[in-house]
Image 1 (tube, each protein chain N blue to C red):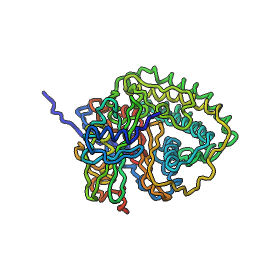
Image 2 (cartoon, each protein chain N blue to C red):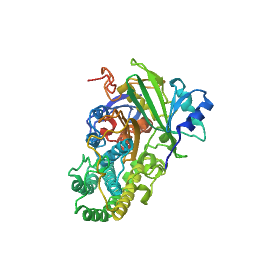
Image 3 (cartoon, each protein chain N blue to C red):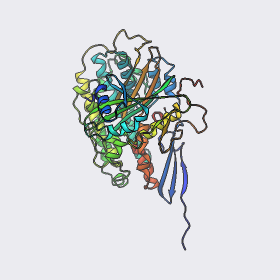
Image 4 (spheres, rainbow over the protein chains, first blue to last red):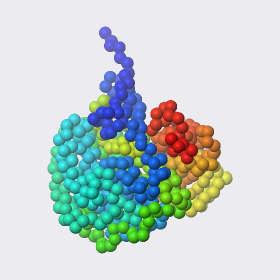
Length: 368
Length: 147
């Protein structure tokens, strides 16, 4: 006797422990296999771009913290670089090294969180997450030394950073980067050769390089498809051209490669932080004389950084006033979701959660 | 370093292929007429020595008399970039062609511009509001929206 079947559309989210924030997905299933997805965004839309038009350039730094709230330093850095490009503000070299150290520590924290939550999505209920968060806590303690806050940092300013790090920051940083590789080895030893992880992530959710480039995908998701494109190497900014590091790439663009690229990037970031801490020159932490109400001349500028999720850029238009005329945010998580349908259709329900987790989306950035 | 191609060079290449499509240029930008957008974009995508296979960002700015669309293009293989701009006029549903047939990456970005700025993209497969809900009155990022 044949059983009558029909496709069923189920709503996944917006509140769901596996959707990395308030993300809603209307999935049509044929049994257990996904045949169509329709993402619904906007549950965290706060109108950041409109708010930025009525705040001064320095006040907008606090708005940028809350975009990718897991990687505050990167958002700040991209924004203040755009303001500096627009207003022609020079940054002292010591400030550039401080920015690089902060940005790379932030990359480590963000990738640890992404890895922990990917393992959470695979069903390893919170134990690998706590391994990752234990190290992330130490990074947040370092950030607290730098600027008093743990997550929404607002550490960067047009012209440099907020303040000189305190005396006890440098020894704490040295101890941290010396001990971290051992902890990453411990984490990798539990995950990378784990047969359950391999069975569930190898060749799952494959994205080809051509699809990724055509869909404007950047960051670890692009590098996992074997395209060696990293803004820190292709178009160096701050002092990245003076530091030695590799850009890890994956082979096939599957979920496992996306996880592995993030772990390898953590190791490269540790190298960058060690070099920068050794080579940092003396000097000022901020260019003196940049007014609080900076008024850039009329015009526009775009500046981007290689954030943990991809290319994070700000397009600022100035009309000569104290607030931006237009502040457009090129959010990598938002644009990385362009290829979502191609990546999810044809996989099973459990794979859907895993693939979505490996894209590493932060809804604050998607919705702005 | 990513080489930002000079506006003059890009304008010259465009005008060789499509006469008078590039209306003006400056050091880093090329302005093209909105009717020629799709053909110029296809030309920039296909020409081997330009090879703009990557659309970095698509921005819309509301300068009350007109809207300006900024297309930031990149070639990863050649490591050069260019900025293409076009203007559209009118406050009631100004329309330009969609470039989603060339770069799939424009899909979500054009939906966002429709949602927040109210510029229609002809040829977009699914032009619905994305960040705000269907039925939201108005387009918030416009300068005359004082919600």
